[in-house]
Length: 92
Image (cartoon, rainbow, N blue to C red):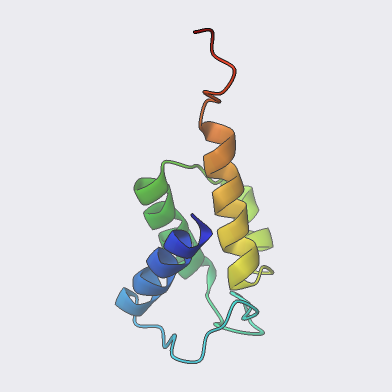
């Protein structure tokens, strides 16, 4: 799942006119890496919300800027897992 999220994020950033040719999992989303501004982070978050059915609070945007690409995709994957009802252990 995390690979799918990463592919989606990189495609979204490309559409937003960011150069992702040198981006690795360790690339920061904020000033030390891609240098996404708050509006770009909000746009990316909305696209991720729409694609994967997760939600971000506005006050989380500042923390997102401090994440690497891998940390962000792991966070999204964890949100998806938390939102998905567990189906194991159902009575037969």
